[in-house]
View 1 (tube, rainbow, N blue to C red):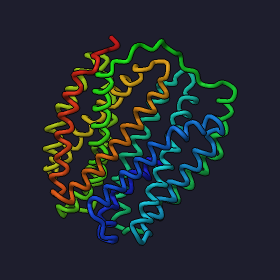
View 2: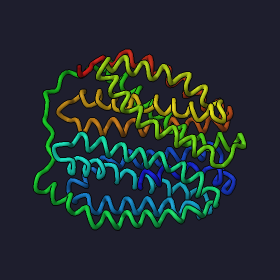
View 3: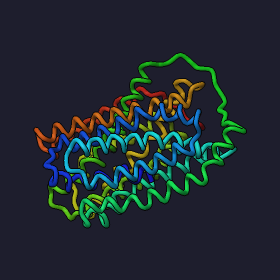
View 4: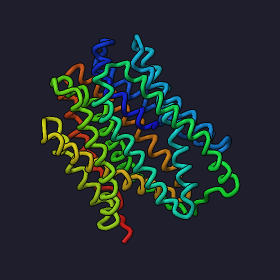
Length: 366
């Protein structure tokens, strides 16, 4: 529900541009602020969860996200909208550590499988948000955001009544992770890994935030952007599975180079495509964006095997922050060189990530 709320807002950007008179840079700043608030707050909320439990934090994060998206259609000025987006980012930051923790606890001996299921369900929420918003909410106008308070409140109420079990289980038997001896850090490989993490996040965030504006500028049907983003995001889940399998079979370096190299023409042709061609290319780009996700996270965890949780949190936060910065820069560029020219910058980013992938250790499981 939290991810659903966060991914619904970009579909209302074209309406907000007309109502509040926003520039491309102002709209991109909304995504940047949300990303900063969610990514930078996650370590704190994870720490807080270990001390006060997940029941209240998870419940309040869902309710807060629903309240923010519900009020977004009623704001009368940009500062108020910016504040709502920042609070929505905090709700996202509060939820993700709780979701991952609950998945690990409830999974028992099948912790990895449980976490995978959690990631797939989260991806479903991210995927269906643009589709439902574009086909049902956006045609009803800005104030249709108020309807999202109802499912949000219902989910929060259900969580409040059921999550006490998770906190009691953690108190009785905390989840443990086997430690490993840390090896010397290969800083060249770590730097290359950072580039791939950042570029993947940047391209995804930029497409989600700016595709609705691009389609509005082309005078496409109001629901077209939502359908396209749905196809792209739903295929990311498939790409995650394919990328993980390829990395185990042929190695991480080959996998990452292949995905990022294919992303170069994929993004380029997707930005100029319309109709059925756009739908097909959206699925291709989604597949290519999902492929590197688990591969880069697995590589990041091996930097400090005895601190996998901390390294995973840092890797995700850095990728999210820098991805948000990239969107902000693209929005500012769009006001100067045009939206199409700004979006084409992602093609060069994918090429840089492909080159950086050559410096990542080519490990595989078998």
